[in-house]
Image 1 (cartoon, one colour):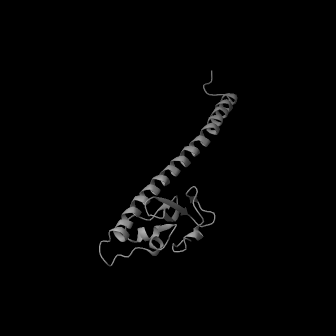
Image 2 (cartoon, rainbow, N blue to C red):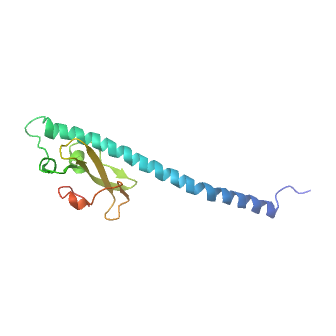
Image 3 (spheres, rainbow, N blue to C red):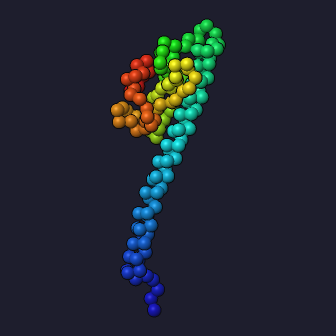
Length: 147
């Protein structure tokens, strides 16, 4: 009596495993993409917090007279904004990356400077690898450097 598996048994096992892989892989990819998007949303909130500190230090309660509030925040009547590169260059937050792409961005405040929203643009435009949902066109923020 021989011990082992027949070709039919091996093909059946391979077929069952293939079906399981076909069912599992799309779900795993979806979970990965959802977690990456959630991580970017957390980073957007951290950027907003850093921007609020930056505005406090440079615009509302200036640390000293050498700290100058950006003109994008002071001269806008209906829209005030801070460029992400202003915050990163002053050390309020590290450079932001999405997968292997560098990110640029803007923090937009309402006219009284109270409520802010972060918009990130990662990768090379106009086909960004990540772009905050509802992000406006970068041409509206001519004082920021986008790639």
